[in-house]
Amino acid sequence: MVDIAELQDGARRNDPSAKWTREQVLSIRYWTPKLLSFRTSRAQDYRFTPGHYARLALGKEEELVWRPYSMVSAPDDDYLEFIAVLVPGGPFSTLLEQLSVGDEIKVDKACFGFLTVDQLAPGRDLWLLASGTGIGPFVSILRDPAVWQHFERLIVVHGVRNAADLAYREEIAAIAKQPPFAASRAKLCYFSSVTREPGTGDFSERIPQLLASGQLEQQAGTTLSMHDSRVMVCGNPDMAFELRRYLSALGFATSRRGVPGQMAFEKYW
Image 1 (tube, rainbow, N blue to C red):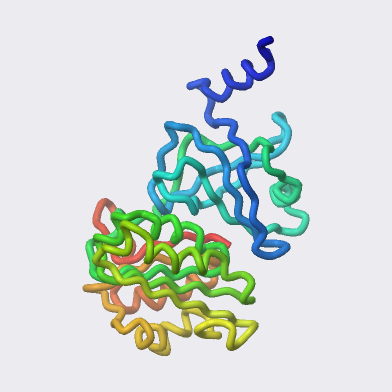
Image 2: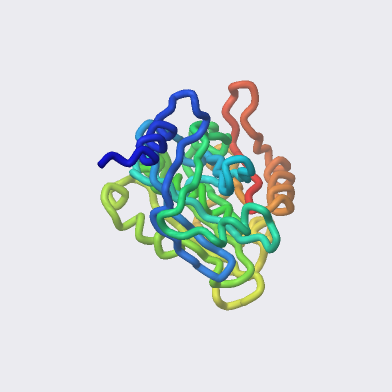
């Protein structure tokens, strides 16, 4: 017997006039009680560039709640992966906290954002500076083999309050050992900074202070320069503001009117 409801659902999913697709939650991982990542199915024709974000919706059809989330997955994965923090009382967080494997989630057919490597001028070193869940788009970027061929050094710095918030730390380290990344020209450097639990990370200061003091450059074994370095920043607005001011004073600029820059920013926390 044919399930009419199932056929109707499939028709809606593939309706070219619809602005979103109906996807299914494949897995959920809680890093802490308030920090989670989850995977969903992916429409075959969905395309994105590492660093882009998607718009996701939960809730009843007539009361959908939409929120933007950066992709953590690689562009050629057959699923989409996201990382999120549960905000107490938040409309989307309340629904997300109730989510189970097999549940439906809606994904906008378009992707968005400018935190992509192709926005930057060619360079030698790529610095990926993240706070909190801002690490998400950088994991996607690191999962792109092309990035490992375009740069000599990939320097990842993840700042968090507590050590348990260092999501994807092991996954990032593992990328460098996997084919085709292991045979690429780039060298990966990963540093963690845990501000509320000194001694549990490589550093305990905020990222702007680590740059200003020269500690990051010393540990990375390279100098931050406008000629050789390209910097991507994703995290809370205060960090982004401080880093933009610091880098601008060194001559760094964002891309404008088709002219590639040396730095790119996304507020994500």
